[in-house]
Image (cartoon, rainbow, N blue to C red; front, side, top):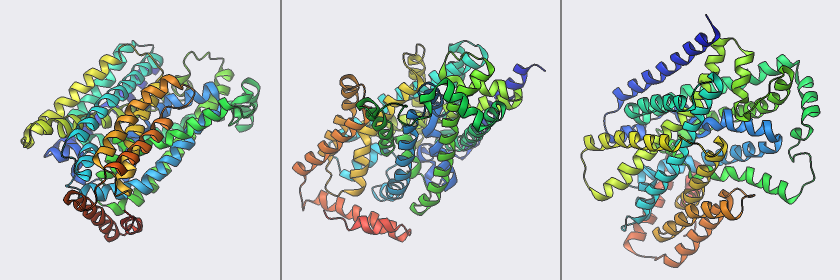
Length: 510
């Protein structure tokens, strides 16, 4: 058989497995809460791998290695920032959010949690949060579809449009029917595939070159500045901004709905600890593999005499030239896994934003059957809009992802932290902070392009939310007493679950 046949067999098996998992999840999905949150019954290993796979997307195996290939280890500050942010997210946010969303009227989405937590009778907070999710996730999902098109274009000299439509179609199919469980269990398989690929490809390339010494010597000759964490130059203002911008990626974790919804779906708050250990192990190994893939790609391309026209395809090219065609097909399937796992998770959250957070504002008591139908219809609708946006890509994969990541991080990140750990946050403070964070990323991207827009957007949103809350806080009202009681009940639930941090946060000064 030809090499292409082996590769297509591997990809066919992968697609079939994803659709089969989606079918099994469909049979376990009985109502709207199952479709949106898996009935709050995710084991810690599923939550951990699902959060990681839905987080990393195509940028882990295409965007980040491509950035390292072009600019060197100075781009690795993104990986450092993400690692710190993910650890703090699992440590601080995961157990308390799982407990708080249960206590606060069984909230199953991020916007509904904000509304219930802050007793926002105006419904404006829920509506704005739903709109923010729809806008930024449509852009985020579009970036994944762009990655799918680039994948097929570079791997098979195929048409970009054909590849984009194929990736979008299969992902829509298993997400449409499998819902949250389908997305989560396919994420587990996809996460493991990504991990293996990011170990096998760089290790194989290093062996082919002749070892670490040969790799380092080749990089030092071809691109000496690439081995420096500051770009091989003096620590100038521009370099400092690059490092700060890379580290600022970690702030985004606190506000990513497709990641923190996995915390809400855990079986209990105490399982956040074991999930954190599994998730962080997966993440650190995967990020190291991605960084090494970009670095070794510099030496390997020169060794093979390959002129790489698109740096974001470095892992794809190495896999196809290094490995047996069937194994290379599995690696290419892992790249697709990175892309599709994120698209599926984001489709579910976008669907929940429209159905749970916007439709329910208009219609108070829709039937469970209608909610499931609307949820699936929204998955299809958002997917089609994102695909239309992806028809003519106007940015790199990393560029598209970074803007959507900044939008969620600045709009939701400060509010998640304040909601969980500060009693005096008000609905008006949250509304003002969310608006400033979402609008801020557009403004700062335009006026300060050298600094990642997430950082100033996050800081401004946090300050505005605190100031407005202090101005609008009213002690002693019935609504405030209910909020304080839920804050206390959350700490009690955490203590019962053996999460010591819950007892301390319960005694925070109002």
